[in-house]
Length: 312
Image 1 (cartoon, rainbow, N blue to C red):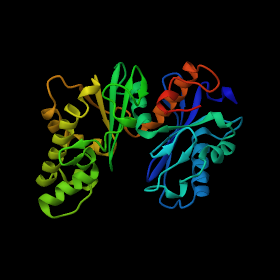
Image 2: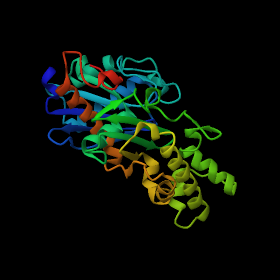
Image 3: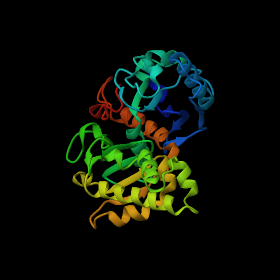
Image 4: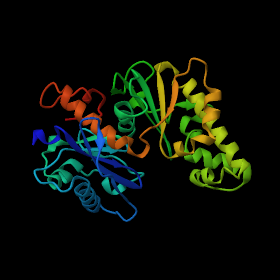
């Protein structure tokens, strides 16, 4: 089975409400057919495994001879063990050994089924085939329900080192009267709009309304000001050359990006939008898998295991 991922790997992007799958191939980390499904009707671990098996089969055209698999998953998740520790979302996966549950369905051995933090996968996709190509030090920020973050040096995700917070996470770092996520998240956008108008609307609804809604535009500008301050202060010590913005809120960048740039100091890193957007984590799983094969120091070693990103 060790050769199953030599030139292709089946990748998954598991979110809180949806899952997507595609085969990532060399050269160029190219994606094949991308298939996806919502998770609203999934209520058990067995149903989750069944759904991933179906999507994987559709993306890979079946599993004759097996295929290596890499999954981007949200945290908290024990990446080495393949066991979810989430209680706030996908609670039916809590404590389930997903590696043992999924491997037989894909026809691969346990070492050929691996897990990667979703924010790390997103940044690796941009490093390998997107907006962060060619930069030595990069930060990826995924702007959605919360704020995800990842740090990379020389093409590898790092969770320790100068300017890197614990586990590479910035959502809970002190900022103004609270933490970063209180001011940079979909929740923060909705709360800021409610303070202005007394109305409760989602960030997606506000993005759609922004062309005709002054309060929505002002709310996104406020969001951008906070994001610019975070990049210029909280993230400054890392010394990034580029910061890549992705996630659902990035689709509304026209309403907040000018405010971000206005708040950045003169020596700030280059600011780029994700080139891969919804496909970044899928590509990133491929980048991580192929890098682990290239850099493996032994049957259980890889250059990425030191960050806990892609254990063997």
